[in-house]
Image (cartoon, rainbow over all chains, first blue to last red):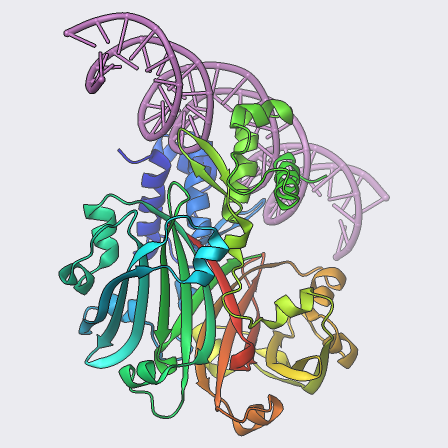
Length: 234
Length: 234
DNA sequence: TTATAGTTCTTGTATAGACAAGTGTCAACA
DNA sequence: TGTTGACACTTGTCTATACAAGAACTATAA
């Protein structure tokens, strides 16, 4: 049984997405929602906080909660899309090609920086294609401590699904850095880069619910296919 | 008078930064903090939520709140830094050169998309330099509705400071998109790009506390000087 | 007409209490 | 020995209540 405030948040999110509460409208007041859902006002406030964090509403003291124009969020300033976004739009044909799969150690820069004691890891290098166009080269270092063995079949499909559903690993948070760097000859060839030698590099350090470091990922994106969308308060 | 929970959050943040609570340690339990600060547990929980959002702690049900290794957050994977980061480290010499300042309209793509009625805006184009090296070209469209006049002196220093402190404008949130695109001849020259014609483009739509659209910014970064750090839960 | 003050909405903060649920310890039991 | 179960701790959820503070309207007074 999910928490009430999450259920209410999901319901409100739905109603906003289906424009039962349209952009620019005020949601019912907190006491009104409280009565509507038969919960206390604090519970309603927790729900509204979820929507606030998701960038769906904006709260104005003394006035109410305004639905933010959805168009404002994912503004297609250019028609360049990220792998994930394209993957969601199911018209596209996404494919994965395994380049390498081996046992190794987490790179020294990482293990030293994080003071890791166990550094044995599985290394997976994968090329992601959409409509037969190469888009991203992903390199993953996954600690053996948590995932002893990764098969080619698993690497072919979604590793995250395997980790979370089959192994019961709970991923909690990640830190990412985005930079632009020259690519190696190998990556340039994989991504079929001709006009430039630059790639967008997204490095992620992923952690589990028990705070332990779990996975290091280096994603090298073709620059013309990269897009990152951010929503920030304050 | 700031809210109690914000004061407590600030105090805890300080103690973490000064390693009175070291990385990996558990904070005192919520009831303990509640007694320590003489507030209710719910108030403590609000404080801890602030730290959680800031990525300073991680909460584990049944165990407690762990201080996250600060080194994990801003991991210097490469030595490339963003303009803002360098600006904070005061050793660096940051300068701003005004390229253009004029009255104009918000670009059509924006005004149409956001269904703006008033589109009169001030346009400012600025080149940012650090240690006499050109780093970013910023182009701003600021609605005249909120800021009727911008002088060269104001554009020379921080516009945000002027908006918030002098005009009392309250900025609430922004949406950003990061892409990599070919630069114009002019921008290439300003940034002294030779090896590549690509720049990192950060487009921001900024909104005020009353939900109104306020400013559109296009920042074109030299790719070798760009770095973006992100911290994400779940 | 214009300003002022009050009233009634709204959200923001804070409290005290209760129970659920995850984690670890330790003693009792088979 | 090894397992189970009770217990004491932790965070998570939820309630009912209260007052503060911002916003908008209205009636009153100048």
